[in-house]
Amino acid sequence: MGPDKRMRQEKIVEYDVLYQKFFDQELSAPPVDAASADILKKQADALREQAELLDLAEDLIMVLDMDHRILFWNRGAEKKYGWSRREVRGENIHTLLRTSFPQSLKNIEETLIACGQWEGELNQIRRDGSPILVESRWSLRRNEHGKPLAILEINHDISQRKHAEAMLQKTLGELEARVQERTADLQKVNAELHEEIIERKRMEEVLKRREKELKINTKNLEELNAALTVLLKKREEDKNELEEKVLSNVKSMVLPYVKKIKMTALDTTQMNYMNILEAHLNEITSSFRHKLTSQSLNLTPREVQVALLIKDGRTTKEIAELMNVCPGAVALHRNHIRKKLGLDHKKINLASHLSLLP
Image (cartoon, rainbow, N blue to C red):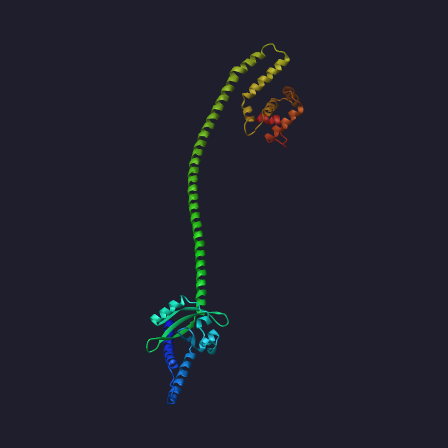
């Protein structure tokens, strides 16, 4: 039992003793003979003192008959409920205060008769219409024959305490709701972090797999590049070998017949054409033509033909006649050849430069 509860029980016992003295004297029949006047005065004085002690109590103390009509109503009850002692005397307390019971009044009365007391919380209405919640203790008083005579009711206002408990419960409920909300948020964040970790691990696995694939592909490409390098080298070797064979065949099989044809009876025009043919064949088989067609110079076939004729000492007019083009076209080819040979804006004779090429 807590300190407050123990103190309250001690007060109730004290009130009970005072009440018993007050009750026994108030309900006892006064002497009717004049000889007992002095005794009556002393009883009245004692009764007044005991009533004053009950009035000093902070609790709400009432004496009720067995029909719950008010016989006594202390000053604490007057102050808390709003009615004076004179106004409430003889009134049914539960009708006056519009009492709401935690169980039926009949069950409470049965407990009171059987046990001699009852305790519980009552909701009541004060004179100004405001509600009040009291912790109530009823104590039954009997006469010398055991017959119930009256009820001592001691009420303690717990409205503020209950309000504070309700506010505390509300605060605890709100706090619990916030904790649950925060917990839910944390669980959500934790789940999202877990999903993110799983996704990152998955991405790491994907990256590792792709890195492995990249290494394999790189190795395959290196091997393929090496194979292509070998093939290109072989192709270049085959190309050079083929060119050598072609050039060799031109020298051994074509040029001799050209010379034999030139020894036959030819007119002037035919002889010129044969000379040009022989010159071109000789140029084809020379290293000069390979130089002109190399990737570094990048001369077009038409420019190579003009360069060969310039190197042979032909003039622009002669080249135009032989190629069946206008002299302007030959001059344009000459300019392109000079640029590709790096002779642009230089005072170097093109024919002399070409003759110096191997």
